[in-house]
Amino acid sequence: MLARWMVLLLLMTGTNLPAQEYFKTQYAGVWQRHLDYSKAVAEAMPEANYDFRPAEGAMSFQEQFLHIVDNISMLTALLTGSRQEFYQKSAATGFKKDEVLRVLSHANAHVLDLIHHATDSLLNEEITFRGVPMSKQNIFYLLRDHQAHHRAQCLVYLRMKGVAAPGYVGW
Image 1 (tube, rainbow, N blue to C red):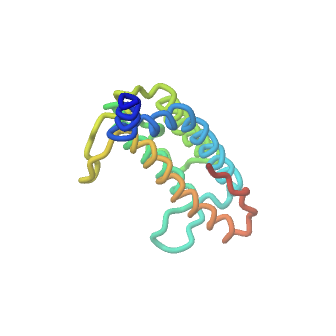
Image 2: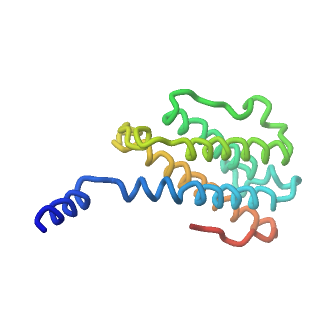
């Protein structure tokens, strides 16, 4: 009986197995819903309004999504050791809506592929990002949080232009 309690106590302390189990069984689905929602928001804005910015100095609707892609490029480099560029920045000023959707989909698919192939050793690897020690698993959560932040700004842009926003998708 004492041995069972010792094993239970060991499992409850000093392990991140529940977090890894969640990541392996749930996070790909979470990311898929997340990227589908971002795509729906990007698709909702008419192409004529892709240059809309609510104030001087604010990013345009298009720039918000390209910023998301740039962040994916930067953060996934922390995971893989090499930076993948999803578009040429010098060509981005003339991007049409379908080109923005293409690079956004490509970048989000790259993250989904990394999620599917993440090993325990990768997820547990400790790094320091902007002075904060964390595991590489946390980078995946940071990717989602950053995109949600800028997607929310785009939802406001839609409403400012009188465009119906897609219904909320979470979890």
